[in-house]
Length: 333
Image (cartoon, rainbow, N blue to C red; front, side, top):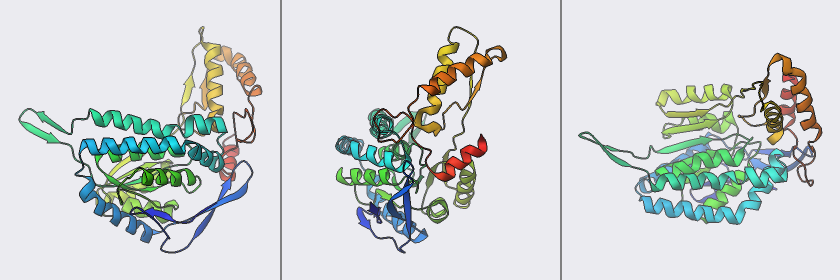
C-alpha cells in the first residue's frame, strides 16, 4: 500500500521533496504501507490553497454548508468498511472496535455538526449591539493515532460548518484512514482548497503549520510536550490555539452495592482500544478494605478477555500501536 501524494487544492499531488516513511502494522510488526513525509514547502502550498478557497467558502450560506455535510455523510456510508480496514491495520484496533466505534465516530461528528449548524445563531442582537459570528480563517489541524478518525472528524466537521478552510496533518503512525477521509470529502464535492491534507511528522509539518503566518487557528490533540511546542510556535502570530492534551484520570469507587459492577466496568474499559484512550480510567482508587476484592474482580475480567490479532474472530484487544509505545508502557509498569 503506497500513498505517496498529498491532497492539496482538490488534487492528489507529489511532495515538493520525496521523503518516505514506512507504516508498520502493529499486529504483525511488518511494514504494510508507505507515505511521504511533507515539509514546510508542502505546508506553504496547502495553506496558499486554503487561503484562496477561504475567500469564497467563507461566504457560503447555511443551506450550502448543510448540503455539503449531508453529501459527506452519504460518502461516509459508502466507505465505512474502508475506513475501518485502514484503522485496524494501521493502529491495531480489533475489527469489532474498528468497525463499530472507531470508523463510526467520523459520521457521528458530522451528524453533530449538522445538528448544530441547523440551529446556530450566526447573528444575534445583544442589547444595542449586533453580534455577527464569522469564520476565523484557515485552520491548521493536527491529530493523533489513538482514535484517528474520531479526532480528524471532530475538527474538520465543525470547521466546515463554520465556513473555515483547513490543512490537516494526521498522525504519521496512522495516516491511511485520513487519506480515505480525503477521498470521501473529494467525492462529496468539497470545493478545491477548502480541505487539504499533508502527511508528515511534528518537526517537519506540525511546526510549519503552527507557526505559519496565514493560519488563523491551530487545533492540536496529542501530548503535553508537543502541545507546549505548538503554543510557543503559534504565539508570535497570535493564533487562536485549541488544545486537547489528554491525560488519564483515577477511577474512584465507593464501598456500596455498585462496587463489583464498577470494578468490572472499570477494568473492561481499560482493555478497550488497548487502553490507548485519553479517558481510560488507568488508576482505580478503592477503599483499603476492598483491595483484595477489587483485584479478584479485575482478574476475572482479564481472564475472560480475548487478546490477539485484530483480524481474528472475537478478539477484544489488539496490540499496542508501536514498539515505542509498548516500551513506554513497560517503563510505566
